[in-house]
Length: 183
Image 1 (cartoon, helix red, strand yellow):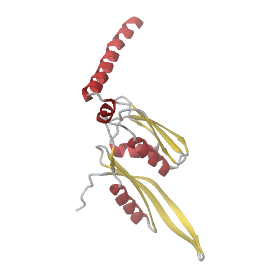
Image 2 (cartoon, helix red, strand yellow):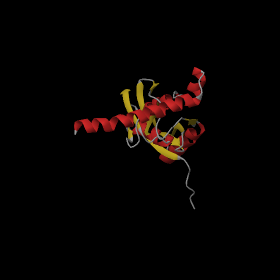
Image 3 (cartoon, helix red, strand yellow):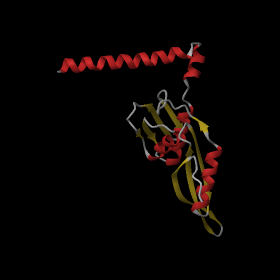
Image 4 (tube, one colour):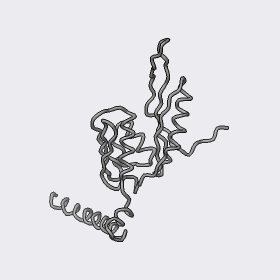
């Protein structure tokens, strides 16, 4: 009986690569996999093998070893950020509940594995799937938690939480006024 894995595993890229040697070309398969648990842990791994299944298995094991923690709050990220890797640049912005994941396939795979449900993204530069995924990971690494910002500014955490709730309440109070003026 097969046991289901608690991890979300997504194949980002599978391609054939070759190495030229004296006797001709040696063909192998390259696999890039992203693994996450859906609660903020995500990792990316890649591997090569002469067959598809071993390449994917090796890449999955590599991704599990490289997992890192990402701050996910209410299904989105805390603040806008930019992730860079080689010639790829990914802009990540928090989104409201119900927006969904607006992203390319490689960036979407990383966000889903990390447990992010609402995010806006834009990829700039190269569109290599492996590099896009790595740029997304770098962007998610750079997100600061509320506790880190509070410590950096020497203020209590409640100060930032209170400010956020005040902004939300102000926005909900203003919206009904606009509708009554238009009607």
